[in-house]
Image (cartoon, rainbow, N blue to C red):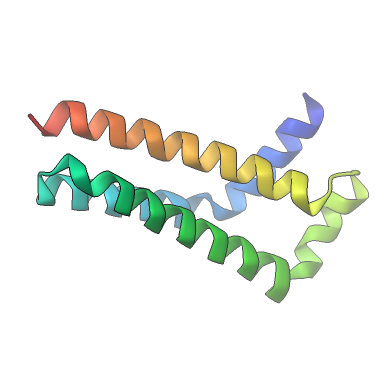
Amino acid sequence: MKKFRISLRFYRSLAPFSVLVTLACAWTLVNLDDLRAIPLLAFFKVLTLFLFLLFIGFLRPHELYYYYNLNLSKAALWGTAAVVDLSLFALVLWLTSNLFLS
């Protein structure tokens, strides 16, 4: 449980960008008013998450040393961030489709 909380700390560093992309996808879904756009939005979300994690991993690797010293690998950090982010994305899209689309 302690490692999960530390992994969530890593997720908080990318959460503003991630929430912005999620809200943009939800806004796009409402404006398109078509549930068939969900796979394309999910692909866009996965692609942006992957690119942002690569940005953190390759351009700012010094920020990961804190987590390495706490015995968390890059794979564990990225996996936790991806699972949390895509879960929140699915929840937001589900709420958007149920509240705003008929």
